[in-house]
Image (tube, rainbow, N blue to C red; front, side, top):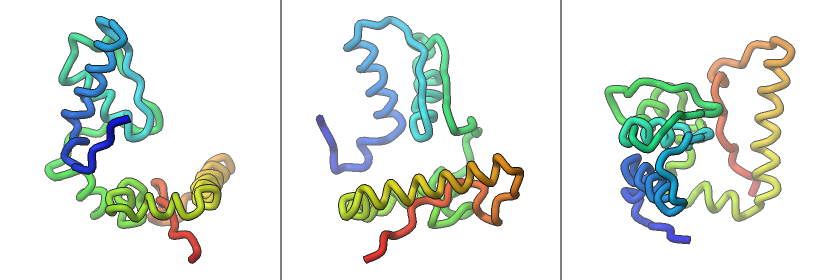
Length: 142
């Protein structure tokens, strides 16, 4: 598997190019593109950039939002804060180090947070202020 250390290799244009190359490699002329979480914007942009290849889009867990006036992660940082998982994962090497230190504990923490949110919603309990969206990973105990 190819992985670039250059973050510019992961722009939306490059990711759409990856989807396009996958369709070509599979010999498909058109497809329904499905994206979950961070993949949802890739699916939408593939449809926007290459409507000739896309019959439909299914986006899971993330609502479509119109383009903002600034970079999305900068806006997330301003509105939601540093703890939001998409902001957290922008930190160079920190998330990887945390996951590698204790994958079971880190995934358990993420699952626990998801379970708490789902339980509150199932019982009609309002979200705490600032927790309307994913709280992001918490630092693992040293």
